[in-house]
Image (tube, rainbow, N blue to C red; front, side, top):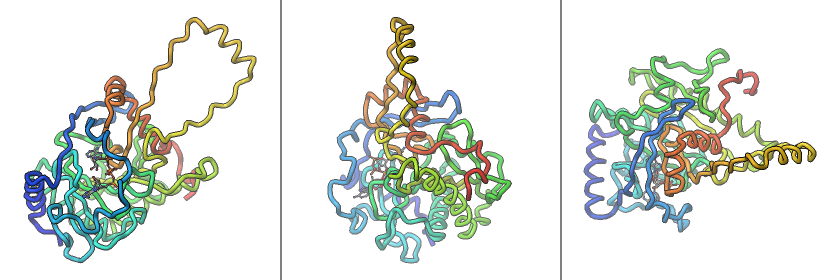
Length: 348
Ligand code: B4P
């Protein structure tokens, strides 16, 4: 059972950790943007100080095994010996916390019904803090999901006020359902990347382990299908995905790359030499230099709720000029949207 005053405990621990220097909030500026095609809202955090941070942990040590007391909010947050609650040592938003398994478990392992219920109850307790407070719990699973630590952990922070995510829009006014042959999970066909969303019951007392587990596994089944289907074209694919959970919905996103710079575009089919020569002759004088659309983004689960972390000025400038580059990046780190495909076309 999670303590009724857990939000207050996190707040107090965070304030103390900031004061005594055990934790440092990295400064960032934030900008709201919107995709011109899908209308997907984005919140871009620009944190140039993070460019200095190594991408991979510098040592193999597990930071969650014996964390500093200054970061431990609870050693047994669910009072069942399964999870501890820590403060994130390197946050860019205040009170970013981590639900970490007490015993080492692999970050690539599936969420259990107990993990899901704990995450949901945690959100309910945190959202109760005040009526405008909404929290996101997320799980970066597998090497391409954006995760940097292998010890199983879920992360949680408050969704910035007045920020409406893609999933909020998709689920607005929709009742909970489980997918069936006639009812596919929700997926917005205006964004380029695959994502699977289910609304959760409005009444939290109707949500139990079974409902969460059935929702999660039905989305996981669709998510993992990509790794079977793409095996011939991309034999190096490793099973990776993101889970995003709020009080209102659950979303899974299959992942192909952790960073946009890892994306390898499909080679263009070769054109006959004759044709290329002709076209070159005709267009030589009028051709404009192509706009450089490459950006350097590392994307974790939060990106697929529209919250994007940018560490370098060049990428930030490009995104401000052309916010549609975010959809392109989410696509490059995910898989193509499947909302136009019928379930029997991708064989579950
Ligand atoms: P992972 O799932 O493994 O990785 P991540 O959140 O993508 O963060 P990463 O570590 O790759 O850092 P990044 O530069 O992308 O989570 C591991 C978590 O454990 C991280 O939160 C990490 O900070 C934390 N951690 C590591 N060592 C720790 C220790 N000794 N004690 C306690 N906690 C420890 O991102 C930099 C930061 O920004 C991360 O905190 C990340 O979670 C956060 N972030 C990224 N995108 C964000 C967004 N859109 N909004 C708000 N915060 C965001």
